Length: 121
Image 1 (cartoon, rainbow, N blue to C red):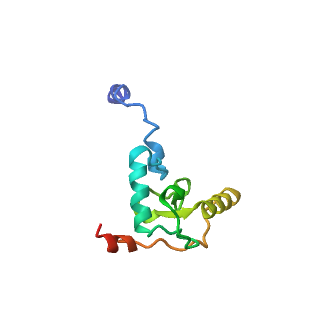
Image 2: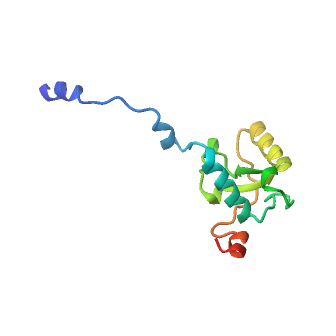
């Protein structure tokens, strides 16, 4: 019992900021890293909305998580895609209404994208 009393003072307080990462929810990419990532994904997707196929300018496109961070998705390139503002709005509204990701969404292609082959990234 004497050992347990001495160990008690050595127990550290749990850092709750790290617990969220263990639950699966990641932080959003922000700042210049987000701008660079958005451009890279837009090029990979050949400047097209991945849902409707509409050609969209970089500044008018939305960098979207196919599976939202709140549903356990990550910031990996395979979970990111380019959407036009209309498709992004509809997808976000659908997820907000149902409280879950839309299971009817198409899969994200893994590996190198179409634009990567064209420009040699």
